[in-house]
Image 1: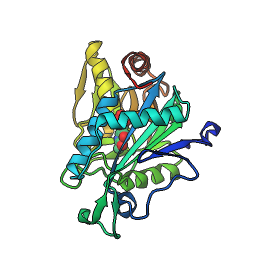
Image 2: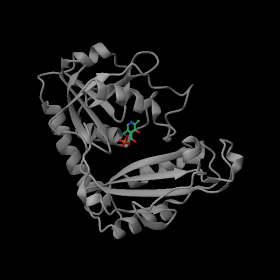
Image 3: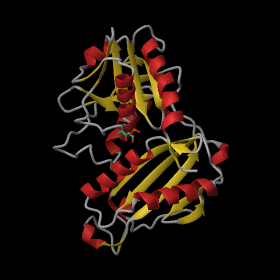
Image 4: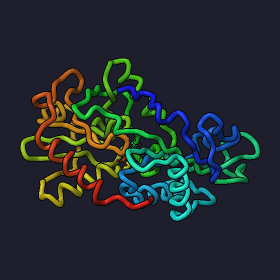
Amino acid sequence: MLQKFNDLNKDLIVNINGKLVHRDQAGVSPFDSVVQGGDAVWEGLRLYKGRIFRLYMHLDRLADSARALAFAEIPSHEHIVSEIRKTLEANQMTDSVHLRLTLTRGVKYTSGMDPRLNTKGPTLIILAEHKAPVYDKSGIKLITSTFRRPTGEVLDPRIHHNNLLNSILAKIQANAAGADDALMLDSRGFIAETNATHVFFVRGNEIMTPFTHACPEGITRGAVLDLCAQHRIPYEIRDISIAEAYRADEMFCTGTMGEIAPVLELDGRKIGAGNSGPVTLDLCDLFKRMVEREGDKVL
Ligand SMILES: Cc1ncc(COP(=O)(O)O)c(C=O)c1O
């Protein structure tokens, strides 16, 4: 899965600390904490017809992550929402937009990792792009990465931080293998998630998804679990081994960037019948209706 350049995005206006700048002129200081040490937190959001799906859950996760990293200052939800609105209006965007919010610890007076070097902060970057869900809705192919997802004893996945190298190494393996993405295991060998999404499995009438010990508490994952509860679809959250994945009838992945995408192949093995299964298709349909109904109005 290689995203293509969308011509609609060639003159994007980006918001950096409230200043609206053309994408080619936008820049952050070389002294910014995100450049110095990836010292930042981020969120991906999606705009549907003037509404952002689960906006306040994303803003809570951003603020909670910044609090865990002891940022001296965290912008209020109201401030971020008004900057989002300003950015969308500057780009005349109303629908099918992906937004990436980045909040860094701010600018340092000299290079180094010590947060005491920060005298100006934080830096809030809002990048809004015209972007349809990135995965092929007819299905994707995964391989299992040799890189493991860390649990809380290494770096707590409850912190949604900008240190994405663990995922990027797995993605490089997927690219080399001609796969769309890579499945990642936790340090015990159970499935955690992919390099960018959460995963679900269907076997018989059981839906399963792994615990979130070694992955973020996904907002799309949470929405799928809410749909299961609302529609009395039984599910279980538990440790899932790779052999269980191979014998699943259906597998799909979830995330804001790609919504829900069926997984049709894992490590050269066909999953189920090798096409999108009925449970996945039903959940895609329910999710589509949910995002239209439940988004927080920003425009
Ligand atoms: C590592 C990782 N896994 C999964 C996801 C998907 O989570 P969400 O549904 O909240 O977009 C994300 C999104 O930020 C992520 O960074």
